[in-house]
Length: 206
Length: 184
Image (tube, rainbow over the protein chains, first blue to last red):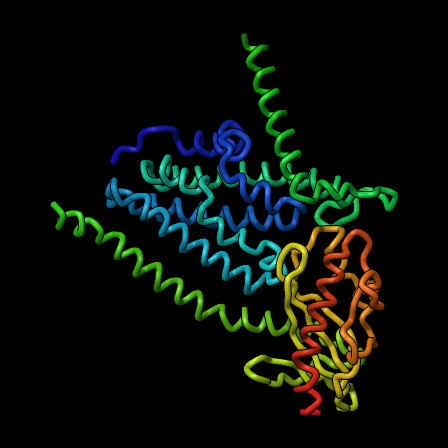
């Protein structure tokens, strides 16, 4: 199968900002909202999701000549579910505290559309190196998005960053920010900022 | 045509077998560690729940297929029991460990194993400040919060969570006190 479409380098760059999975494509919003109360769980989630995405892209790229159109989604899901289970068991064994904190959101990586969309758009059509570059790029994009939301929420909500106190004892901590509404407010403002920046750029270009 | 569709599925079957085997391997490899983690977590809490207890000397005891722990101090004196308890909180199930003295007549302490109460309000049930309010309370009468005529001071703005902990402790006492008295 000829490798048409963006090159590996282009795929990598596109995943980070121009086609950022969360901020541009609005995919993977469940973990973005649910586990970004603090940096530590958010980064663990990014690690687990990146592992699943990279492994799924590798497997799908390797077996892509064998894929049948009517069975491809089934194969993607099967592959993703396998690596999610591995990630989940791994967290339960080596990071029990974090595994408990993330709770159902680790198994829920299975239904993260970000991953299945990369299998469908890139890995099932392009060569292995391109698929790997794509997975790394998109994972980095996911890292940036979750890091931004979790950073804002943890700093404003508790005055801490990665559990290290940044703002002095005098800072009261906006409890709202670490509660669910804080996730929606932060993500909404962040998306607004990205769109505003976009429009501004378009205007200067025109 | 139908046969061809079935035949096409060979890849799915093959992958399912391969992935299934891989997962079985992961499970066999990691499950002892995962079980150990769960046990460690309970054992870690025992000195908090029964003051003076030594973690390493605690012995699990199976009563009606539920594991409770017999707590011993440094001189191998039996100083209490640790029983699991669970019930509905404000948001989700709250799981506790309740410490009782050897004849189960007094509560020696509480530990929270899992809870999903409101952050910064209901989740203060984890704080030692709240848990200590149960220490040395007699189990002769069911416990209640001050609002309900009892002796337990509630957490500000988290009456429901405080009440839930009381109820869970009461049901655990009701369930275990007769059995532990017999064993003592």
